[in-house]
Amino acid sequence: MISSTRLAALATLVTVAACARSVGTVGSAGSAPTPAAAIAPAPPKPFEYAASSGQYRFSANSQIVQSVMGQSQDMATSNTRLMSVALARSAPDTITMTLTIDSITLVGPMGMTPPGLDKVPGSKFTAKLAPNGSFYSVTGPNQDDNPLAAGMADELGRALPRIKAILAAGVTWTDTLKDQVRQAGLEVNREIITMYTVAGDSMVGSEPSWKLLREMSVKGTGKGNAQGQDIALESSGTGKGVLLVSKKGVLLAGQGEETGAGVVTLAASGTQVNLTTTTTTSFTKVR
Image 1 (cartoon, one colour):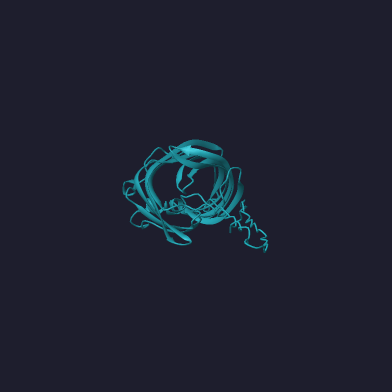
Image 2 (cartoon, rainbow, N blue to C red):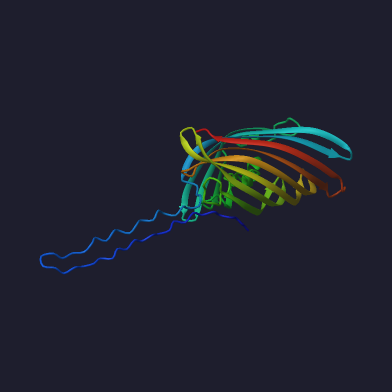
């Protein structure tokens, strides 16, 4: 499912042996001391998220142009969340992430607050991840009791970026992800190809960190039912951004911008709705 290029620096163990010569003479005998073998440094390890806890502020703003039968409409959405996140190593190959939405502000395309938003604060999600952030599974609120929060489970379960490399200045690698997520009532099959570059060292407050640049391309197809209508989706997009992770293995901050284009087809009428979007996102660890 995943392909990645890892740059590893391997330490070479050098052992120095001395030849001892004994000379038998009256009143003296001995040999030269043998120097101890050099101790090789431990080889660098791929990045892993550390056990930690903190609170993050996340924001996303989207500009949308919707075109139907030659008529266009401009729309905007915004989303701000304050989330508490705790990571714990539950097995050698598994991290358990517990995420709680502390507060949320959400404005929909028509400038209205979605129904059920008042039930979202306090919602909890539990995800199982690989130590590098690769997604295994997620559980969250029940669809019947809290549908708006339930629809966020796939997104929030993948909140940690996958970092599949040994981090060092100048390292680059490509990560290809193919998965299926549920978005707005649709089962969407995605392919995301991301190229990472470690730009170098950085400081976030007093925390030594790595600065990672990323560029990505996304393709998606899906089918499902939204607002009582069977629909199909085809979409594609590109994006770029920056991540900051501490050298201890804690996600600290990030920002990005994505542009996308999609076609939604209404099955009953065959009507096609064309969408173009520009989205900016940012997050930061606030405590």
